[in-house]
Amino acid sequence: MRNEDDLRAAALALRALDFGKVDSESEPDLDRRFVRTADFDRFVEGGTALVLGAKGTGKSALFELLTKHEDVARQLAPRALGDVIVAAGTGFSDLSEIATGDIERLKSEAGFDHDRLWRLYIAVRAVLAAGRAVDITRGPARDLLVAIGGAKDLRIGPVLRSLWQLAVGDAPAEVRIAAGGATVTLKGGKKQLDVVSLLQDLEISLSAAGKRLWLLFDKVDEIFPADRAERVRSLEGLMTASMAIRRTFPAIQPKVMLRTDIWRDLDFTNKSHLIDKQVELRWSRDELAWLILKRAIAASEVRSYVAARVPEIDEYPVEMLDREQRDRGLQVILPATVYPGEREAEILDWVSARVTDAQGTALPRETILLCNLAVRNQRAIDAAPGEGGSLLAREAIRDAFPDVSRLRCETYLAEFPLLREHFRRFDGQTTSTFTREELGVLMEGLKPSGDDLLRDLHEIGVLQPLRGNVATAAEFEVPRLYRIGLGLVIRGRA
Image (cartoon, rainbow, N blue to C red):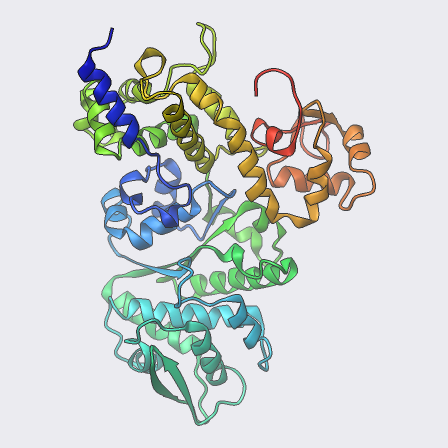
């Protein structure tokens, strides 16, 4: 029998329990909730040029940590980041970035192509970012800093259009640029603004200071959202420009964060050269456990409640706990199993199976959403702890999952309009497993079809081949994550 003080502490902890935002850009406490994974270590230690992952695997969390909570990132990797200047290429969606409309306006300029645009964009962003950390004393890079380096809320799209006139084609005598409410002038005349010279000046300055510049690109999949073909061309230009700059100017290192399904659509020269320079974000069962615990104890009331039962929580960072300590801490938050009985699956196995897509990728975003919805359900049920003293009861967690599946289908799958009718065909089906022939009949009359459709559905995580790959499998399965959201009607446990 639990005493009144314990029940009161549990009620306070439940009231404060919050697993944070599912989108890292709106998470004010990301510095306290970020979990150091093996992929984080691979990213900062190696010569990574590309970070891949399904939507919800943490690409933006990595970007936000490095660009907005740089002090925490440096604490996690002091040696790897010791000589690195970190800057955002894209990802904040603020006034300083290039937008689709800016590119559209530039497309009418003579000599336009996406590769040349991205080279100019990277050069301008890199010079402006590095100019705050190293002394640039020579050439066009210095001229650029003098002209626009101090401007506030610089709209880089309009600036690029003006710089394009200096960098491509016949250079005018001068270019006037509006920046932050002021107007500055860059001289042109017969001499063009040489992007290579900008990068050379910056490379020399960085090397002299013993520094490297990481220019991080996030949210690039949002460029041309309504024109998939143009988005592909733009991203191919970004990748070729980034590869060329890294190769020629090793101190300047663009790093692109991109959805895996979009990456597979890109086709450009030497794409295979990035195989050993990429990290694909994947979360293990154990890493999901660290995520749940660290996010739960971000609230001081929850931390105190857990530490009263697991004192090590107050003694070490979460990632330094051993598995036994971590699991004891988790059992204060979650029940040991999601169904009663000795032979039932452990809670982490149950959660992991339901937030994993057909690529075998466990999704931290859906894990966070599941836990937050379980908190909502628990508060509606009762403020008292669940079975075994955990803050969340079994039914609160079970009842949260259907909403997770529906929201995943409503948000992520909405980004594939060409497959919308294919998704609708699953509605009302009474099985999650289909033969290749059954899928052909189910999708009859739709395009894409056949092997192309199976490959597309697998690449976005909706259809998993059983006993083989997409080309050879006789049967395919819809993962648990998508079954309810797609409208499958299956008896038994979800």
